[in-house]
Image (tube, rainbow, N blue to C red; front, side):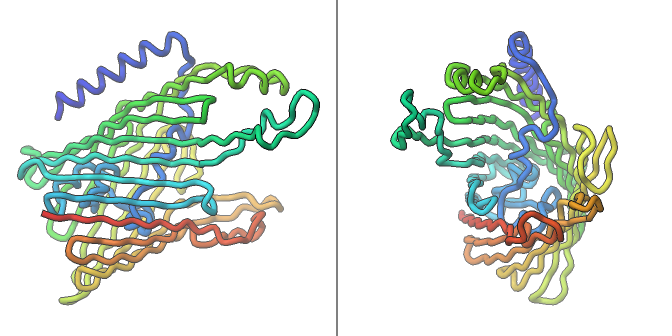
Length: 365
């Protein structure tokens, strides 16, 4: 795995050196943020707490080291969620399997997109007449493919190591697109009822190169007096997630899992619990109640923020999450509600802003 990581790093450095000759390289905050929304209704129902406890086909995303704890030989996971009242669609699919007793692999695909956006640039013809048949539609979508590998370590008994190489493609209709590449790495360790995990995302500083179709944008930019965009490159800085979880056996039927993740970001001050110009710290916590290893009730708290009201005062908000699940004969169905209500007193809209996440999976021999 060390050789594989080294080769991937050399590829990234080569691509970066080739592209920076013609493009401006920046390291913006929230670069490739679509990869931090989360996948799977179980995880999203627990406030995105998974680095220490993930054991299914979603592990390629949350922590590839968890692939060594797959329930069966073949494991499939699918998810669909709709964000912002259904405007954006977030989809995920994964297949995972062990290679032998010491290693496992997974392939995962993520898509976050907004479809059917109207292009009205040619709505009015040269005579000033409206032509509705000239309206075209396009999509803005972000894609990622993750190739994950995990292996038991010989250094410490029970230590599991994993890595994910990710290929990113971002598309804005005919106007712009981008390609990116990066590597994530993770580890898990289990001691009795305790579970520990660490996940390092973008350890190579993920490189994303943007190309703009200037010909498609030239007329619109000239009419508005704006400068034409230039090809650019983004560097996504590393993020480290440290997690710990503990199982509690209440009786023969009931058990509980309590877990927490702490995110460390290094791209500047963020609106989180602990923040500085160097590092920002964002903790979140989740709980899962289990009945007969088949019925699950989940909850979580995440996304701590301080917001400014219209009167100038500040308010503290924490995002609640809730989920349920069912498991039978290798098939599991999960449902989650994220951001269940808008509790800001002076918010523009008091409408319910819940996001519904549905995921299912199947594991078989």
